[in-house]
Image (tube, rainbow, N blue to C red; front, side, top):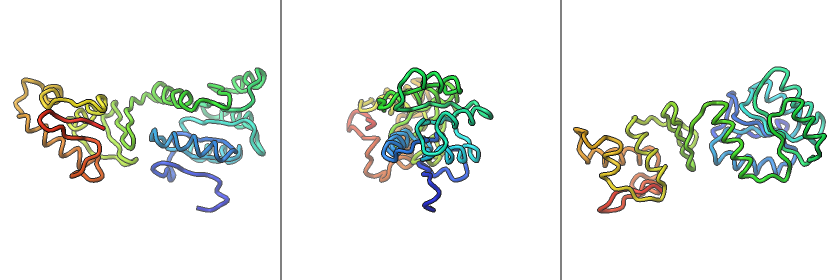
Length: 237
């Protein structure tokens, strides 16, 4: 990648597609740290160290959300916010060390949806971002490590790659993840997913566990996530 590109595309390299989030931040350490946390949540992230670069990225690709610093070299964050608002209603969070009332009012009046004062609590910022994606983009997702389950369209991605799963496989994996670190009995899993009156046999559960391991485990024969608890059932870790 050319040094003058001044952008990092993170998670499932976005290529020519829209990133989920653009981080406009001239402090490389802060930008990379936030990007790392967002990658763990399976968002596609572009980092721009200047306002000019953020606008260039946004005009070319767009974004679902922009996290925007104010004090930037060249064009400041207020100008970036105003420019984006000329053509888009994408969600904008200003994250700035300028915590005075006037700066907050200016940012909000220019169209920012939220104003977070630095140093911010990363967990609170991530919660805000998750809430935005859930409300604004109607995406209901369960994320665990490298797994991302979309409960609206019942799809699974592993390490950013789409993985084909059946409805039963999806429901079984979701149930296990929702009960993480808890051993679930085979009978409970079978009755919940297939129904007590199902014509299928409980061996069907074992087969589906095998298929899921082949799709989500690095080594299906030595699973790290779906653990067999002999004589009882299975536990997701």
